Image 1 (cartoon, rainbow, N blue to C red):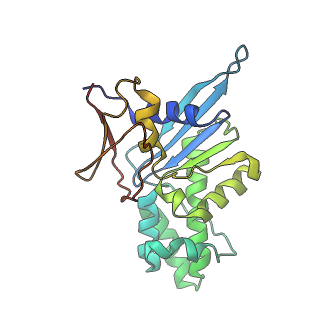
Image 2: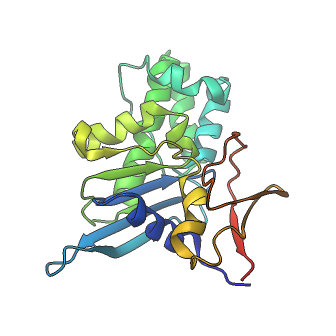
Length: 232
């Protein structure tokens, strides 16, 4: 049985999917990842120059959104609709959900609008990712946005694009961004004779991947933990 680390697999899959990609930002339920690509001066082929992943804290991820939604007493499914109505951005910590709560509760007590606080939470996530995860590395466009929090919260993508000063042409949003690396990893990282034997495990459920039908046709729940198992 062979195993390929998911960030490595994702980087290979992205290079196969896009001819021109500068950076990938992927937010999961409890982790956040950034992949930085560079172009060779000789053959203009792209390769990975650096990879970054958050540590043990789930700040700036889907779990962070869950925490803020609970403080605002809003279903997480309605969080994006609330944030899109926000007009004012407060300075909220994105490093930790606990710290963010201590920032938000006094603002709620002072009468701050929930819409503004939801939008501020998205800005906190973007700040944490750009500053804390990139750690000074240049986020070169085009930028790919992946993962459940970015898929189901388009306002969060808008916040990232504003903070990174990206044009529409510099934004790459895959058709299935919450599942892109799961779908493409087997095809991007395995030899041709192995493709079709890849199995995606999600909460105990297995979906067999076939080369002739690479896309998962039915939406499945987005789990914070994914494994690619390849029986060679």
